[in-house]
Amino acid sequence: MEPASANAAQLVVLLVLSVILLLFHILLQGFLATRELGSAWNAGPRDEERQPKNAAAGRARRASSNYQETYPAFIGLLLGLAFFGDPSGVGVAGAWTWLIARIVYIPLYLAGIPYIRSLAWLVSIVGLVVMMATLLF
Image 1 (tube, rainbow, N blue to C red):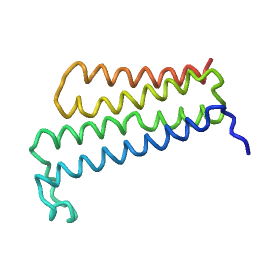
Image 2 (image 1 turned 180 degrees about the vertical axis):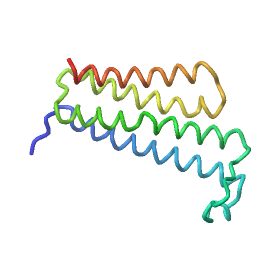
Image 3 (image 1 turned 90 degrees about the vertical axis):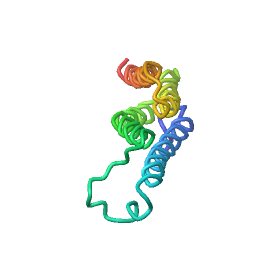
């Protein structure tokens, strides 16, 4: 079966990179929480609702949650581009925009930089809108 999109290879790369970024979020969050709460907490059942007090650990958790909020939309739109095609490449550019903005978002959030962090989030949303518009028009 031949893929509908001439950009199929790029879409697969984007998919793989987005999963790597998801895993990075999970590992970063876990590392920072374990550094404060200890390996016994990490290996245990976590019945106690203990949250790390360290700002970086909390920011990593919130950045991960934020990523996971838009990630299903990205995957759905990426699948749409793969299925219906994107001969202009505009949808793929939107996908790259989303991914790059999400990568930039992490250090901005961890450093506690306001406004610019929000701008990176907004750019990622623009990437999703571009993907969506490509599929609609």
